[in-house]
Length: 539
Image (tube, rainbow, N blue to C red; front, side, top):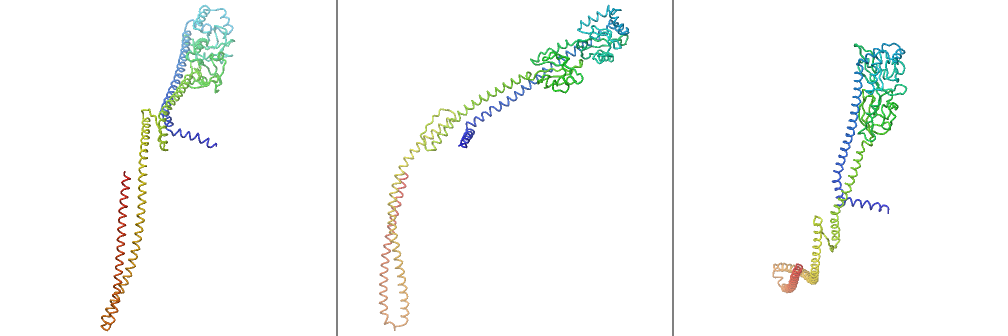
């Protein structure tokens, strides 16, 4: 039972596969869907590549624009430092304050407003710093002593050679400006009790061809953060991450879209899986690709190094958002492909049915005709080849019905002819029986003739012997002539007997001749009956 249950679906499936409808459906789908699938795959690939290029170009352009803006800003600030360091008021203040020995004397002089500094330079430096957006301005002499400051975050008299300032970015920037004899921008660092992050533009102050001090302009990160906060073109998840390398970590230097308190607090260990793009950027690399950000989210990012600030900058966007259009395109393509498959399948089924149904009808009719049923009628309304096939089958069926009718009529005639032939055959059998009897009589007569001939042969032999004996006797002479009379009488008797036997042979020959004549007549009558039967059969 189970085997038959499993065999039936297999047989049905094989029947469908080998049927015209199944093959038409298969090839229709193959011809229609394979090019469609190839075109869909190519279109999807082109769309995916175009989307990837679009995302890359977008992030690259934004990163390049932000980098140019920040580099331009840094160069402008260094030009500001160079211009301010060459102003006579700054040069005279550096000379005058640098000449005051001791921290206490310097503090007293600044508090008393001694010399021309209070009258001219202090107000000028303060107004200039505010006008250019600098939150701090320092004058540093050649002994690395702060001889002027706008506020107490770095008080005057502080030394860059000791304390927390000895290893600060400010100390490094001052030394580099004095060594390179040109303006430089040092990295951001927190200074003072408030821990305000500042980056200093350091520029050497020349007097009579000698360096008499260094001007340090303190930049707050607000302007930079404002530039980085503009995430136009990055969607709802995009952001710009900047960081500078500090030992074995990367210190985030700007607020993040998803972590506003991150600047100068969030540390990213080098070599960790988080913010791999920012790590690469902070170590001086440049590139584009997929990465994991600080939220453990997969992002697409463009990273590069900002040499003026010593920062690495990463422009990133969540991959789920960046490639959302690609997912929508794939979903739309899949939906369109499914709709196409459904439509093509329906059309293929309709076409296959329109072709296979008449053919199936023709097969059923052919089976009925093969089984001997010629009563079928076909309604062939189509004007195509299948309609012509059904019409031809109907015509063939009608012709077969007419032929069968004619065959039936011919069968009746053949039966009548067969009956006549049978009667003739009966007569022929009787004639043949008579012919057999006559033949038997002829055979008996022939046998009798043979016996008579043999007896005649013996008699002739005896006559011959007697004639020979007679010759011998004649040659013997007349002495036996007396006995010749008896011998002649015996010869006469033998001759008489021979005549009787010849008469009997003549009678038997006449009887044989009569039998042969009878056989000839029977044969002629048989030939006539055969000819009549053949003529009746032809009719």
